[in-house]
Length: 145
Image 1 (cartoon, helix red, strand yellow):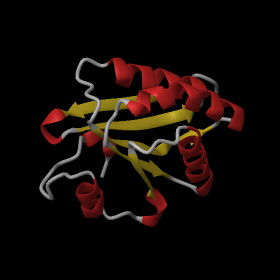
Image 2 (image 1 turned 120 degrees about the vertical axis):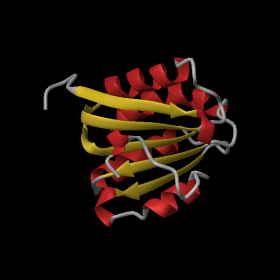
Image 3 (image 1 turned 120 degrees about the horizontal axis):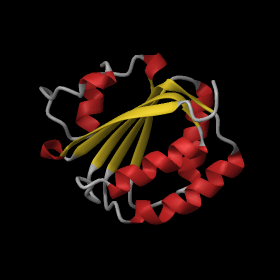
Image 4 (image 1 turned 90 degrees about the horizontal axis):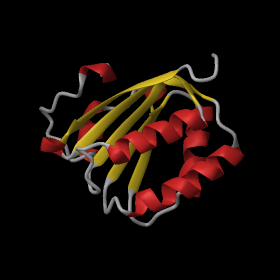
């Protein structure tokens, strides 16, 4: 994949206190910082909103140094999120490791995070429960659940 071949879908559903993101293509430092800024500056963003971020259709290409740099920026943003929950969906062990390393750089006793693997066929009902969504909730179509 070429640099800057990254895109994502974003949907806020404040009725259920959650926003949803699906990354596609290359996920690098630029994609992380751009998406983070757009979310935090979005008119519907609220500090305590939960989130589901799906990386299952993306390829992560981000170094440890870049993760540390991004973490220092994100640390202040995360502090304002209150007791929000963030669920990450990854598609391989490398992406799982990158996500864990990023979380370590952003370490916060405020936000609660969980990583699940799309390869392990996570249970959609457990995802809904963890994000405090009703069992009848329908996720945005772009997530392809």
